[in-house]
Length: 64
Length: 64
DNA sequence: TTGAAATGTAAAATAAACTTTACTTTTAAA
DNA sequence: TTTAAAAGTAAAGTTTATTTTACATTTCAA
Image (cartoon, rainbow over all chains, first blue to last red; front, side, top):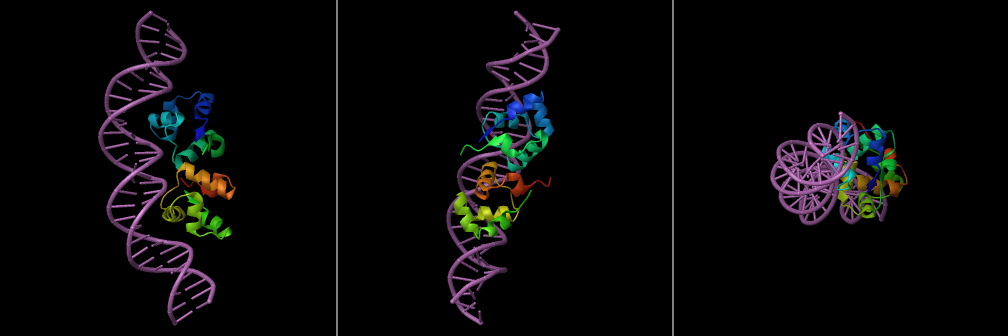
């Protein structure tokens, strides 16, 4: 599972901490997802999609 | 988080066990998701979207 | 070039997803 | 109306997501 989070976040000039606050998760969670250490839960993926106004499939790519 | 799985599965005349096999998860996992006991992981949501040829947002609805 | 902000990382703990086993209840066809 | 398949459920265990704390490294503006 790959994602564009780093890019999308940069487009908004948000820090990892900013994004974490907006999503109500820890900064480490954002860092780990960006670095591909794990995938977000489905609810968190929905929050990201809502925040970035993009479908989940446009943010995450299934490489399985 | 709500979902149409029961309906989509019925459209294909698949049992919970059939669907579980197609997705390589346990039947109890399908049952629990259909009954709303928990949400699938993002990878499993992608598998479902692929199988049913529908975007994740069309299968799951964020009610948060 | 220093210093602060941002990012990366790690360990320990908790929560949520998922499995296995096993049993009960519902559904539907013979 | 019986009975087999399907669906529901529950407990115990494993794995994965997430938090908290804490520290190290990178980046970039003064």
